[in-house]
Image (tube, rainbow, N blue to C red; front, side, top):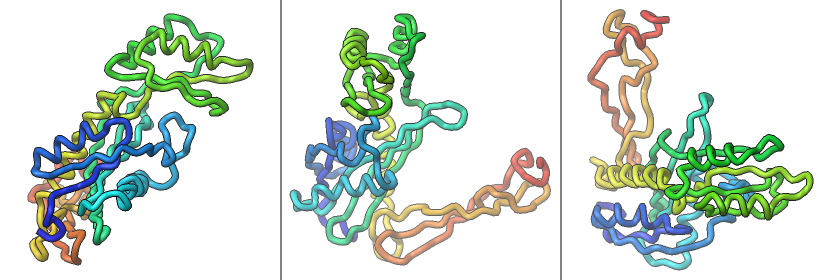
Length: 275
C-alpha cells in the first residue's frame, strides 16, 4: 500500500493519551512510539491559553512536533473539543490525526459523543456545601477530576482534583477579594474516563480508514468526504435534503467515486409531505 511500507508512527501526547490510542493501533498491526511533550502552549481546557486555529490544525501541529525527533514514517496526535450544544447537552468531538512524514498526507479519525461528563459552575455568594456535594456527584469525582480556575485567569488554575477536600483546599487558597472562581471538569484525557472512550472511538474510525484502500493507487484512507443531497421521498418521489450519495476520495491521488444510497426517505422526514 502506498505510504505504508512500514506501519510505524510516533504519537505526540501529553499526560498519557498514548494509553488510549497506542494499544488500539498496535492491535491493528502498527508499532507506536510515544513522545511525551507539553502541548499546553497550543491551548488548555482551563482557558489560561486560548486555542488558536481549528481542532484539526492544532492536532496536526501537535503531530508535527515529532518531525525533528523521530524517523518514523507517520506522526500521530489527537485534539478534543468539549462544549455544550444549544440544548445544554455535553458534547465531545474528538479527532485523531495521522500525518505522513514524507508527503504531508493527513488521515483523520473522528468521533462525536454526548456521553461525556462535563460540569462547571461559578462560585458565588450563594455557594453552599450542598452545592459542592451536588457538583462533585455530577462530576463523577474519582473516575473524573475537577479543576478550579479564575474567571479572569489572573492566577494559574488548579487541576487534577480527585477528592472533595482537594477542591475545598483549592477554593480556599485561590480565593481573594474581587476574584471570581469557577469549578469545572478537568477535561485532560488522562483525568476524564468518559473522554478517553470518545478518543478510543475516534482511533477506531482512523483504523477503519486505514483499512480502506484507493481503487486507483492503493493508498490507504479512501473514505467518504462529502454527502450529496437529493434522496427521494418514498411517497411523493421529490428530492429531499437527505444524502442520495456519498463522495469518496483518495488523499494520495485525484481519484473520486460516488456511492449511491439504496433507499428512499420516509414521508415523515420529507419537507414536501411533512413541511
